[in-house]
Structures are given as C-alpha cells and as structure tokens.
Length: 479
Ligand code: BG6
Image (cartoon, protein in one colour):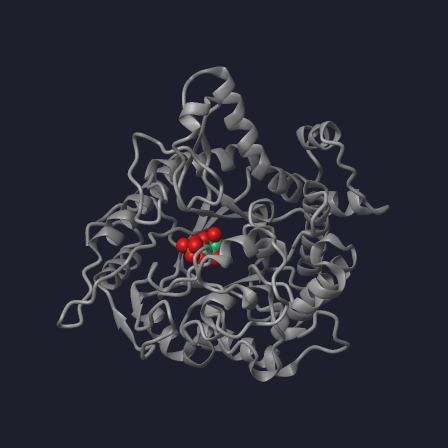
C-alpha cells in the first residue's frame, strides 16, 4: 500500500494556451489576436508592456504564434501522448478570434466552433476532462483598433456574448471553466493581458484599472452565464500567484510585501468575495483614479463569484524598501522581484522555490476558503537532444517532484486542491520571450526559435516520470 495525500479523483494533467500551441493563426476564418502581433526579439517586451504595435504583422519579423507547434492540425497525436501519460485533464484556451474573428461579428464562425468540438470530443474519448480558459492573452485585434480594447465598456458585452456562445455550444462537454488567465497580468504586461497600448500623455494607471473593472464585470457575467447554462459545471478565476516575501523583518519591508501581494489579490478579492476591498478603494482615492462603474455593476460582482481559485505558481517573489538591495533584481521576472539569497534560479532568472508553493496555496486557502486548482507550474529550460534522440531532463523532474511534494504537503495542511495541470506538457512557445528554446514539456517538439524544425514529437525522460506520478496518484515521485 502506498500512501497518497492526493484525493482519488484529483485532476492530474497539463495546460496549454491556444496562441502558444495551435498556430493556424488565420485558418478557417480566424481573426488576428493581440498575441499574433508579438514578434520574437527585443520589441516583444516593449509591446507586451503597452508601446503601440503595428496592427498588422510586419515583413521581416518572426511571429511565433502564427504556426506555434501546429496543435491545430496535430492535436490527435498530442492527445494520444497525454493519454499515454494517464492525463485526467487538459487545460486549453479558446481563441476568441476563432469564434468571433472581429470580436463583434453578428454570428459566430462555425469552423472555429467545430474545431473545439472536435478537440473536446477527442479529449473525452481519451478519458481527459477539458478545462477551458475563456481568455488566455487573447483579444481580437479589431477590438483593439476600434475600441482601445478593455479600456472601453463595449468589451464587456462583447465578451459576454462570446462566453455565452461557447458555454452553450460546449455545455455537454466541458465541466471546468476559467474566465481570464492570470488576470493580474494586466497591471504588468497590459497589452498581453488586456490588449492595452498607450499613447504619450495617457493616464496609464487610470486606463489599466478601468480596464480591470471591465474585465472583472465581464468575468462575473461569464460566471453568471456558466451557472445558468451548465449548472453542474465549476467556473473559476486565475491568478498569477507567488507570494511576496519581505527581504528583512523590518516592518517597512513586511508592509511592502503585503501591499505587493494585494496588487494581485485585488482581482481575486473581487472575483471571489464579490466586492472591491477597502485597500483598493483607498488606492484609487490616494492616486486620484476615478473608476467609472455602471449602475448594477456592484450587484453583478456580488452575485456572481467564482467556484474555485485557479492559479499559476512558478516562483515566490521578494521585496525590499532598501534601495541598495533593490539593485539586485532577478532578471526575467515580470513581477519585479529582488533576488532571494536563499534560492536558486532558472536560466531565465525565475526563482525556484517549492516551499513557496505550499506557502502560496495555504495563503490562498486561508483568504478565500474555496477549492484551489493549480493550473500552471513548471520549469522552463533548454533541453539537449542526445545523439540517440533521448532527452535526459533530470533538472525538470527535480523541479516538478519538489513542487508536487509541496502541493501534497499543502493538502495535508488542509488545503482543498482539486487538480494540477502543469504548464506546457508538450513544448510550446514561451509567452514572455516568444522562444521555443525555453521548454516545459514532457514531450519534445522539434522546432527552434526561428521556426525551423520538423515539428516531430518525442518523449523526454520526464514523460515516464509523470506517467508514474499519475499512475500512483502522487505517491511515487522518485521515478
Ligand atoms: C504564465 C502564462 O504566465 O506563464 C503562460 O499563463 C506562460 O501563458 C507561462 O507561457 C510560462 O511563461 P513563459 O514566459 O516561460 O512561457
């Protein structure tokens, strides 16, 4: 008998996003999305942060989302591999612009709807539950052009129409939903998170928080629609999590850590508790922000809170009030973090902190008292293919093993965690850098940063490791 902390119906699996996997960026009537305008290279970060991009792809730039790993045509082969590992769930996103190419078309695009029908059927046939995110860094470009994206109230109604369309269509196939991926990303990479780009002189904070309000109302309306259309489904929110540690026990550092966490919790406080927290109202007041709310918004937010808290966890973060300490930032961290002297980093500067997973899960549990779903976690690394084709990714196994163990400890602590869909079970395009070289998968994809390669799939050493983990329901982590 082996002991497992994980409940018997625990949803083991993996997570991908439409724009990072599907490719086929204009096929079968799909419209352009924000991510289709993110090239690789130096310009990428600036555009993600909100510098105005060209609204059509440019000659001479490489856009990794356009082909990605061609999941659009190869999903059956990929799902067969996920099934071989024993997946119980696959988290995917629907590309809004596949369903409504401009975002405001009169009728949905049948070819786009059909693609996801086939995808969900294939998953179910293989005993895999689809877990579906409505918006994973995905806004139709037409809405960016015409309305300035989520800064405009119009997006709320358009998103509601999109959400109702897919909820209705897939009501018999999908029982786990999520509204906005990493909704707090809006504050850090506003174009990626919400299609927001800024002109000289814009009041950036005002625009970001107004857009956040629109997404929060749209999220609540999607929750309402889900509860009405699929009463036996669960719909959650999704936070880019990872608690802030104070660099020292100086109360000023501790207070700053709390404030930094609240920047993110703000979104989930609204989505889970149904109202703006006092600290957010004070922040708006102190900073002269005037968030326009329609009559009825407060009631919508209050009445339609989420069923579970989905979150990604890659790293903890560290903060300091000391300008000297602050000079030592970890590179590559979107959230801005001081390097933690007790922890190692990945090649991309992402801090490795398994205990942080347990801490974060416990804090989310204490705060919300709702089921949690770890919908992203993983180790982005460069893999070497040996001459015999094998890939010994022990570093990945090590990272995952320690994080799964930490999750088990959190469950032992009393935290209700319903599943674990680790990020990129098959190598996909990196969201932050656009690279293929930064790989998370158990399955290797032959493609490089410039788009060369056969796209052939092969198993890494971690493939067998994860299979065993699932087989033993998390009791066997040593491989
Ligand atoms: C999360 C996103 O931020 O982290 C994913 O939801 C992303 O889309 C993942 O891919 C890992 O980040 P990256 O930049 O290494 O791909």
